[in-house]
Length: 318
Length: 189
Ligand code: SF4
Ligand code: SF4
Image 1 (cartoon, each protein chain N blue to C red):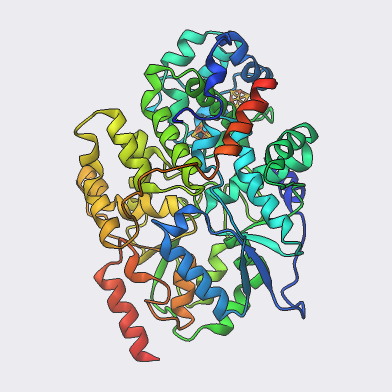
Image 2: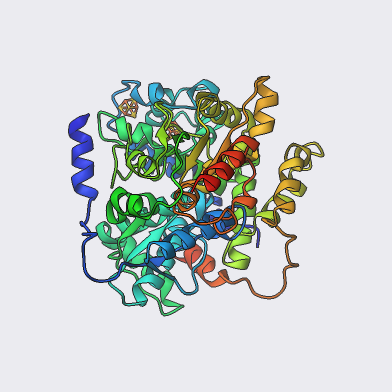
């Protein structure tokens, strides 16, 4: 098993970026559909955090849906083409920047398409025929990076720590990774026992909840098509986080399952499951002194009164 | 227009031909059960993942497609990570979903319809419009209680300014050409 993970890790780690590079850090940015809708605060917080860290993000011009989970359940070629269209747009921008992706589902689709374009010449030819109508072509060479990967390895906990203005002392955070930033492409973390979020959480003065639910599945789209199965999976995560002050997420699907369905799941289980759920960039941004509005906290569906109070008293103590 | 790129593929192709690629993917399965033991949805499935791979190897179509098992796969990729034969069972689950969608199997209507409305929105707007997907899906499911399950979430999302009413569909869809071309290339192959 360890062998296989190592193989995956070394196979998929395409490059190493040095955070000490003199050049200003810069990324192409693919927000994805959720970040314009139900996850708008993830977009706000990511942009605000990057700005506070002096990192440029350049939107991929004319981006479209990556295919989400739906396309891969209908046709592999359609799924690859929808994702590859965005890789082609990114490649056409002729930059040597990596492609920063906050949504884990988008990340997996783009990563899968990039792999297929590099490794399956026939598939690449088919996709390029499909994209040719728009005068686009794809090679799969742009490096697709999840935001957690960028924060953990390019930015690093030390840089985050040096920007902290309002340490989240006394707060215990449950790091929730979900599936698709970890599996099947094990690029930056152990896909079964991930730990990349822990140093970032400690860097902002908070404690990490010891738990094993970090890489477990929230049920993804089940909440729409198989609600009871979805409620069981998300409910188990919420129940395990009961001693945390907040859950930190890195995926819009995980986030809405954990915050949007929280009350319904609590009723279904007959339990009290009131928990704050925030995106990791929101948490880091708050500690770095960004205001709640700047990280879109008013848009979150579950922020408890005690979390708000804690933020206020931390503010007052600065 | 509702029909997504490959749904035409269902016409005139035998189920055997359709399933052959999945059988090929799972040919080397040794029935160890690691996938079933790793699957977070195994408890909700009527047939374990291990057993569905056996059925795939045996061409037991009836059993595979009366089962809801593959629709209960939430693409967590634990099985693909742990399979000692290095197989990709998660991709095989997705391939079974594709077959059910392409053949518009009535017993899998609820999942495949959701995918279709999702993709219709993508085709039309380029980006998915979440409210448009849900209204289309609910209307087609004709289950008057279904929208109520999501009513409080819908209200919360609206009041947070996260979703808005869909614009009426007019003219050409943004990704019509891409969807049509995918269908064409798939038909040729
Ligand atoms: S883990 Fe792999 S070999 Fe074992 S039963 Fe599942 S698919 Fe077959
Ligand atoms: S990918 Fe699907 S079948 Fe495999 S373990 Fe996860 S939910 Fe189960």
